[in-house]
Image 1 (cartoon, one colour):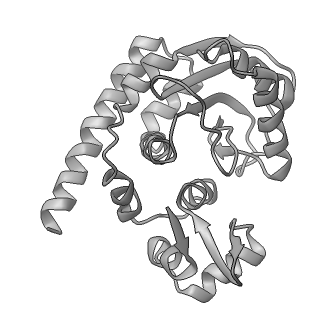
Image 2: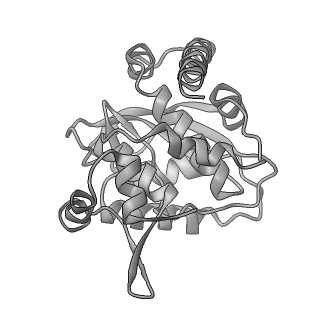
Image 3: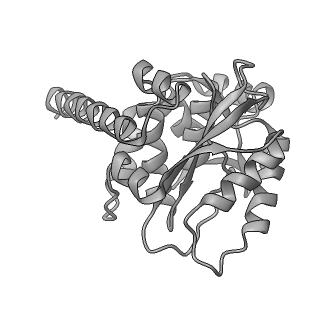
Length: 235
């Protein structure tokens, strides 16, 4: 799903000159084709999440129009697993430890994936604040997996991640998906869930996995109720 600068301005709730300024000054990722600029919907959502800029719910609605179903975040996390006491003394070591714990098919080149994630970090940290990071590349790596999943790694020791709020990271999430639409929708679910203060505190305190999943289910129900109310108010 490719967007024009005008599309992006609508989703971000600003005017087009502001989007152009963000391209210049805040590294909003754009692609040039036939003398025009375009944005990737996944990139736009990820950038806005990192920058803490609100995005119109209609961007998620666009993804929802795809026929592909995506499980709830709690189900995705059950599939990907929650790992405790993950080691690493710096960002590179942590990323390699995280990739080693992803439940990937044996033919996946984990070393290559680690290298790509490390290269992405050199372009800008994926630490989103409050001790949480979501390592990814701007255009998601689509892996041949039967179903998408989310993996959480709670670090043995918080590490510096050059996060937006300059706080060390204690929890790393990874999204693995076979398609761009599912990647976008999962990322959206994760972004909304991580706004929950209680969930962030539980991650910081390394709460047991069953408690984390139970809290996620509470957040999901609340988000679903909110979305339905918005949909009813805007038929």
